[in-house]
Length: 234
Image (cartoon, rainbow, N blue to C red; front, side, top):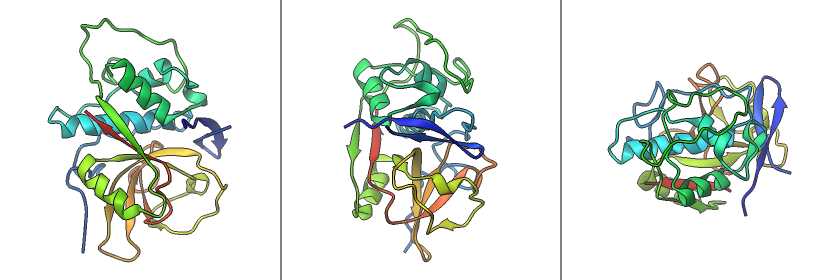
């Protein structure tokens, strides 16, 4: 079942809500991890976490396929993905289905830049260059995070739906215990993990800009993050 995440103002951040060591060389992102992810985009004024996470996964899949690393258009997904609500919320699975079924060509962020608001969909001719995905897989790794780690190793960064209400003021360290709203409300990208210390943690890319967390990333204790997971294939 496709779940939609509606925008919800929470402090200065925007959530999206519904009515031995194993680090990944191919899935490290951000300033502290070189690899197949573009720079973080500030999405605080737009509840488009669903679009940010889908596009970030597509960017990584594209790079893993041997193409040059390039920032793709989040705004294109916000404006054009049907069955979604733009900056007011959306479904990662709905967006992935749209990309895969329609063979949508994602253009670059330079060509279709982020505006942090809903806009009219810009259409491009079939001959226009862009990046399309072949498909995606959806998982429920509840109580099976070892399996999630295996998929991460083989498939690259994974889109994950989390409860991020208490992440507003995260400054660093490992998120271990937090107050919960009791529901998933935010889409992020899990780019790696670290089991060298205690506790082991996931490396999570957020869409709130590089000033948030650890250069735009969070370290989240392994366990309890894996209920709704998607992987993108090219």
